[in-house]
Length: 160
Image 1: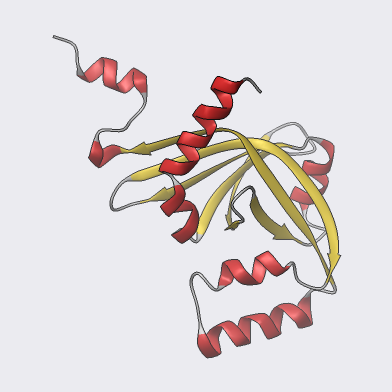
Image 2: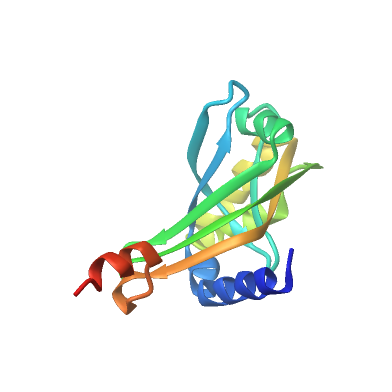
């Protein structure tokens, strides 16, 4: 990655840090084993360097990302209308029990007894999980209400 690309990536991630910290759902895109694209909603946790998602090793996305580790994520907020788009390579590690980041991600949308019940159910369900870590190598942040949107759209709307 060039220095300019690294600076651009950092700027985009910095701009989208609130979405990374507070959003509870991302959409993960990857190529299925049959070569056709997939997009799935999935909970996530931003570690400061990677987006971590989790699944069971028998899930279709596990095998697909092992075979073709390139993936993309979109994280949106409806109001204000903002989006963070990410691309990167998935690194997969199978761990015993629930992935810690999976439980931390759940804490963004629940707490107290609800979170404790969720964690208990996870510990009963998952003897092992796959930790899928995607370190972004490309990112774009859009804040449509603040006028930060794709260049092609800016060009279309600024014609005299």
